Image (cartoon, rainbow, N blue to C red; front, side):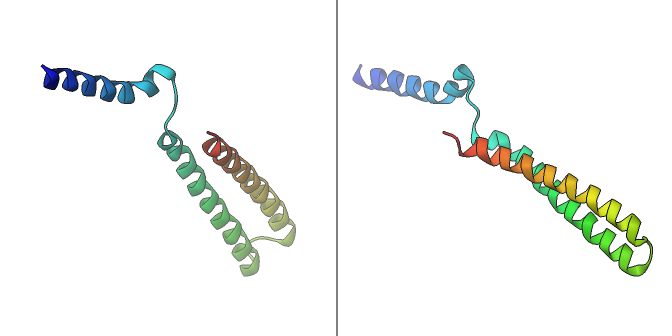
Length: 95
């Protein structure tokens, strides 16, 4: 009888731990990982674009004026990505 009662209590505790996030609507830190991973990949891609634009300027494929315009736009996009990364990091650090 005591064994059966202990088993029922154990099953109840496991069910509470497993179902708690579903009941309360809490998100696990792992749920934000894809957003962060996507933003990290976007950041690296944007940095690569900035380097490619600089290389194009050095090789004469872009004029100085065109390079400045492209570089400015790419850096603004990179800053936006960095801000979004900071926002995700801020949400992840909150308890």
